[in-house]
Length: 362
Length: 252
Image (cartoon, rainbow over all chains, first blue to last red; front, side):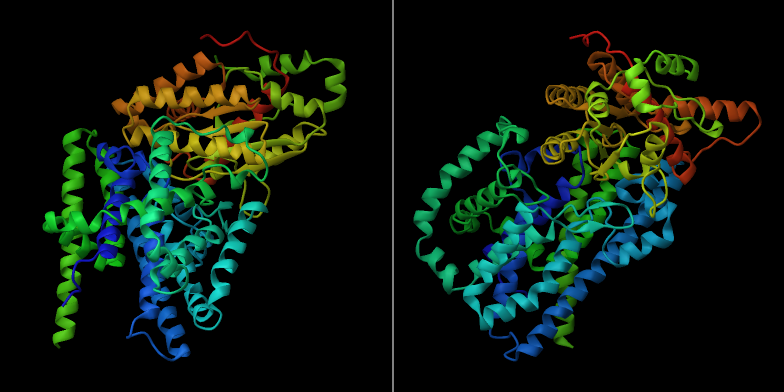
């Protein structure tokens, strides 16, 4: 039986639907996603909840009591995510090639960093396998793979040197901002869209805050006060986003990455705003969920099957882009794309849970 | 306005003696198979200042497929950098590629401000329009985004070169694609920035090939030759822009 609807799965489902919509640039429904009133967006939520899930896994009764076994399990999860990234990248390339042929438009082969694959296949395939070449909008799973590869180290630090985990993570975060440094792409020269050295801090925060000990316990004890402090941050930053009231980046003091708003480096203003947003937003689940059971169950079912749903959502977003290119975009076309897409995400979650039930019965 | 080699050479000939002595410049050539460049003789004053002060010329590339427009193979420095340094003696070029494939103009503009703050470029190469055309971004929204960004760049003493949309025979009747293309021409006229008219260049090249009985380059841009042509267009435009005389202020 799938687990009951809960806040973590609910918000993860929410993030997945947002990612699906936001990855179809220009679509009408993009204006309804929370990034229009928030500095952070669904990518932050996705990574934070990935860390949160890791924390729940490590602390659950079913977690391997043996450290070696735990490391093995977490490593296996990283391999699964890696395989998913390779699979969806391959499907995306085939989709682009099919669309280029079907619509007699070779330019489609250049979409989303795909040009290098078709122009220089030998080197770029090596880059794809090494995760040093990412297709546009298919760049969050490489970050997730790296984070899951570090998960054994996080779990071991948590087990044997818990007080060091968060300071080490934030030391790396601030070093990456102040030096600054990031992961490079290859063979196409560039940078990872999601800097793993900074985004790991959010993953670790999710891990730490999920636990009923240490900082997680402190936050739970003071959550009401934290929410009162967080609310003005959420409101002020919403106004900043709506009216585009951000300081000129060139006028900021050095090191600028500490002060400006940048997604790739997950700069402190984004991190702070995200933490404030989840402090406030997390208060909504309990009073709201009972009144919209269908929505709660729907989003939770997506969240329970997040990897499968994420993979299908990524591919469907690309299909949505191709459809919008082929049929001159209109509100009607956008509505069909979103309704059919979200229905297919639900179908993915339903089939995944049906398969799990079949496995457990056999 | 299209600038032929004769006019560009005339501009180089009109350099001040100090500038000529300092630079020992040759106008970068464009291979015959690349056709002719469609670009105005728009000055690049901040880049010219870098050259005059013997500073490194920092070029920041942004937009879809920005790496490919720089040309060359992966294991050498970008062709654009090679051509410029070969053509203009004493010029030291650094190219910073910050392209994010699939990005719309609005997202690129946000990142561009950050990249300017972090990297202090003298000139921006912004490949813009194709993704917005395919994503059906409203023309007014696109135009407003790009114009605001160009004004911001001017205010921050950064030159801008726009690389226009790709040419595709099949897209000649694509209404939104052509609307975004027309919008880009309006932006260039209003803001007085340099545009590499890739669409027109390739269109002329395709017509010439057709008239000579050769197959059209239906996949132009999707091969190393196409990218190298783009690097040559850019090098020519930058070299001309470095020495072009300042033009009157852009129309409001």
